Image: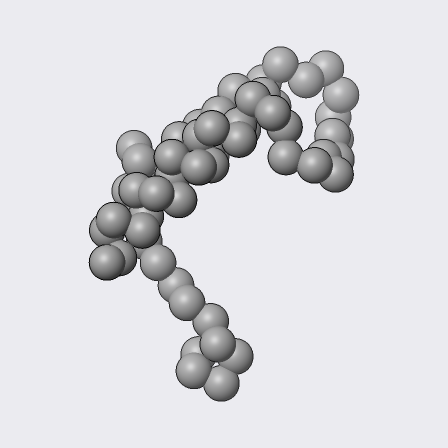
Length: 59
């Protein structure tokens, strides 16, 4: 892992709000496959919250 500069971090499922929100967005889709080129606006706040919580755990 050192050679590839890879980091593995654990986050509790209950703290991963962005994944929960993405699942909700997926439930609302009527298509079998949806490709997002940009982050949906509805999850930007959750991604920010998750990243801040992850940073607090790692520091």
